[in-house]
Each structure stands twice: as C-alpha cells, then as structure tokens.
Amino acid sequence: MMQICAANPALPFCGQLEDGQHHLMVRVYYADTDFSGVVYHGRYLEFLERGRTEFLRLSDMHHHLMLEAEEGQAFAWIVRRMTLDFTAPARIDDMLRVETAIAQIKPARILMTQRILREDRLLLGAHVEVALINRDGRPRRLPLAVIQSFAKK
Amino acid sequence: MMQICAANPALPFCGQLEDGQHHLMVRVYYADTDFSGVVYHGRYLEFLERGRTEFLRLSDMHHHLMLEAEEGQAFAWIVRRMTLDFTAPARIDDMLRVETAIAQIKPARILMTQRILREDRLLLGAHVEVALINRDGRPRRLPLAVIQSFAKK
Amino acid sequence: MMQICAANPALPFCGQLEDGQHHLMVRVYYADTDFSGVVYHGRYLEFLERGRTEFLRLSDMHHHLMLEAEEGQAFAWIVRRMTLDFTAPARIDDMLRVETAIAQIKPARILMTQRILREDRLLLGAHVEVALINRDGRPRRLPLAVIQSFAKK
Amino acid sequence: MMQICAANPALPFCGQLEDGQHHLMVRVYYADTDFSGVVYHGRYLEFLERGRTEFLRLSDMHHHLMLEAEEGQAFAWIVRRMTLDFTAPARIDDMLRVETAIAQIKPARILMTQRILREDRLLLGAHVEVALINRDGRPRRLPLAVIQSFAKK
Image (cartoon, rainbow over all chains, first blue to last red; front, top):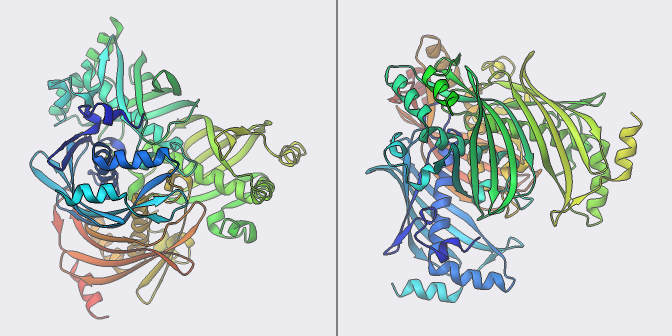
C-alpha cells in the first residue's frame, strides 16, 4: 500500500512533483474548523504533514529509505522546528493547495519551505525542519545517496 | 468553492456516486494514528464525515439546500446517533475506501449506512443518523423536494 | 509517571472513583469545537477515552495489568464497538463531567457505560466495548484476578 | 460556565497564575500520540492553546474583555505567528506542565512565551503571537485598560 504513489504518481492523492516543487490539494471539513468559523490553527499542521509526506513519497528519498526499511531499518520522520505565519483564514469546504519544497539538506536534517494557498491567496507560510529517527527514537543520518542527489541540483 | 464538485463531479476529492452508493478514497497520515501503531478510533469519525459530506455534495439534496442557503437559510449537519463496529485496524499510509449510502429519510433526519474498507477488507461498519439545524442550532425539516426525490427511488 | 494517580488518587486529573462509578471533569477548548459553534461530534470520543483511561487507572484492573507489563507483557486498549447518542451540544469553555462505569466483564472484553453531562444536563450517552491487545496487535484475555474481582461485586 | 475560574481560581483546571507566569498541568492520552510512539507534533498546539486560554481567563485581561462581550462586542483569539522548538518527545500517560507568560503587548497583538515540560525536562519552547478579532473576523485593538495594566508591570 505504501508504494501506491511510487507505482502510479499520477494519482491525485499523491499530489504532483515538478522541478522539486510539490503540490497537494486538501479539502477543509467540519473536523478542521473551530467555533470562530475558520480552520483551527493546529489543523494546518496536519495539512502540512500531508504535503511533506506525499512529497517525500514521490521523491527519490523515499525509495532509498524504503530499501533500508526492507533491510530492517525502521524509521519515522519527526519535526524538530517550525515557524508558522498565518496570514488569512481557510473556511469549511475550501479546497487548499499545499506547496512543499526542500530548502536545504543537512546530514541529519531536512529544511523544507511550505505554503498553503486558496487559489492565489496565501493563507500560511511555514519553515519546517524534519529529522529521521530509528524505531528506538534515536536520530539517524540521511542515506548518503539522498544527500548526494540533492547536492547535484 | 463549495460548488467545485457540483460543477465537476469527476474530481477525485468528490468521490464517486453511482446508484445511490458513494465511494471516497482517504489516505491515513501520522495525525490519524496513535501509539498503539494503528488509526485512533476517534479519527475514523473524520473519515466518515468526509464520506457523508462528499456524498451529500454530489446528491440532489445539496442543490436544494444550497438554494435555500442563498435565500438566507443557513444550515449545518449534526450527528444525532452512531453505531460503530471496529472489525480490523487501519495503518499509516493505507488508502481506505469510505462507502456511504442512505438507508432511510425521515422528515427531519437521514439514516446512513457507512463502511470503511482497505481493498476488500472491512475495517469499520457504521450506522449514522444525521439532522439539519439552523444557524441558531434548532433542528429543521428537510426540504420537501429532498424527501420526495428519495421516496421515488 | 503512569503511577501518579495510583499513588495519589485525590489528584483532580485522575477523577474520582466511588462505588464503581468514575467522574472526570474536562474543559472544552477551541480545538474541540467546529464552525457550527459547538463541540465536533468526533471530539467527544476523546473525552470518553479520558474517562475510561482514568477510571481504569484508579481501579484494581490497572494494578494487575501493570504487574504484567513489568514482566514484559505490553498491552493497549482498543475499542471494538460503540453506540453514541448525542442529545445536546457542548460549547466552548464548558466544564463537562464524564461518567464511566463497567456494565459487564467478559473473558476478553469489557462493556462500559459512559455519559457526558454539563451540570445536570445529559449531552451524550454511550455504550463502549473495549478489549486488550498485545503489542503485536493480537487480542488477549483479561487477567483472571480482574474478572474475579468484578464478579464479586 | 466561562467564569468558573474567575470565581474560584484555585480550581486545578484553571492552572495557577503567579507573578505573571501561568502553569497548567495536562495529561497525554491515546488521542495525542501517533504511531511513532510519542505525541504527534500538531497536538502540542492544543496543549499550548489550553495554557494560553487559562492564563487569559485568570488575568485582568479576561475581565475587561468579558465586560465588552456583555456589551455585545463578541471576540475570539487567533494565532498570527508561531515558532516552535521541539526538543524532546512526550509519551502516553505523561503529566506535562504548560508554562505561559506575556513577553510584549502591542495595540492589537500579544506576544507570549510558552514552554512544555515533563518534570524539569524541557520538551517544547514556543513564541506565539495572538490577536483579537471581532465576530466578523476583523482584527480589533485590545482594550486600553489591558495595555495600561501591562505597561505598569
């Protein structure tokens, strides 16, 4: 099941990856809103997570990590640092576009730039630093092939 | 924005409505799981909500209600009653299918049958009773056209 | 940390267990509400989970399970079945009382009755069937001491 | 109900406000965790919201705003900007302490510093900028009495 986007990257659930920029559409439902009438600020972090996850799934990085996972090296992504600028609210039924790109790759961390938009209007800008951990919760270095593939671009 | 599926029902975010049965695909992300390794039981209610919402959006019912909303009759759906049978767990990265159908329409309530599956495996069966409320929180009757259109089927 | 209520059951976070009936107070925050102005129906499941967890923590059952956990028998609770009756809405800033009691204990399942109230007003009634699973996700029987201690009452 | 802490600030749900520093205890439940075994990064925003809400409820600010609310000036808090440093993970059953203090008050915004700790260990540090909006979603200035009361300290 994990490989569904690797096998068929045209599926809408996978978003689209072009020139290193990833786009994913997400819908706003009741569960995402709060009584003030707009999306609860904490729920945007779930939209951002979806964008990062589908981005990584479509990128080379995912394939390298999957190879290691098959060799028993389980892993999970964790967020180390986030800066969030909320510029305009999203509302029930909105279709939002989550944009994700890599800003920098370090040996054990990836810095990503993300934006959430409704049509052309920017709703949220974010800088996110993620790291890889092993199943025991300890940080681990990114596969060398990942770092090298990014360095070439 | 609300009308995006009414105008283009082929969009994947809208799911598919055939012979009164609605299908919507949803992906499981980190935010949906808990430390036991599987999807948190309360998060399935969000998947069910997405299925009901897209079903109603593609159905005639939505158009009748939208007409009224334009005339100033704001409304929201509320859940009155739910029965949930959890038969197997969903996991991170799973693509799930949410199936939604109407079992019965009463003057002020709709009874829906919903299922969540991963490929052919049933994970959750649900009976859900929803009602319409006005903006002031009071229950309201369904539009007559809605009740009639269902009675014909 | 897990033992904080076992050591000091008077702490408010633990709720109160009297004659087999458990009471826990929970506050409604922004994150619990949706744009219709009231608590999102799926969030009540989190309030119910808190009630069941603190109930079990204060009961003999927890001590028996903790002993086993120390012997390497990790476990988690899962929900098998739920019936939910939503009778009135909760709102932002409300202080709610979650009531939990055991209705029946079977070799591998516990049936609980739960209610959520605001002062004397019933907002939600629930029947919940929970089971124990091992770390590998397989169901396991309840400790015999647990079944016996309940049978005596 | 909103006034429960104003009337009885010793209640544990209100936390404690001393010398401008607010402390609130929160428990980690299943719903807060994800499959990696620790608290989902987005759920910390709910803990932070609880801390800010109880802080404001115990402070003079709340009383000034409540007076205005009674005069028909409805309001809600929104988050404009957040910086989050995740330094260590929280786990199921943990009792966490949310610390909240005001760093700066501007005519239409409040800058808060927040920390989440488990005993003496810092898990998360946050800078949060909040603003007040009217019911129609437009930003509004803080009451003059609020700005003055802070300036004196």
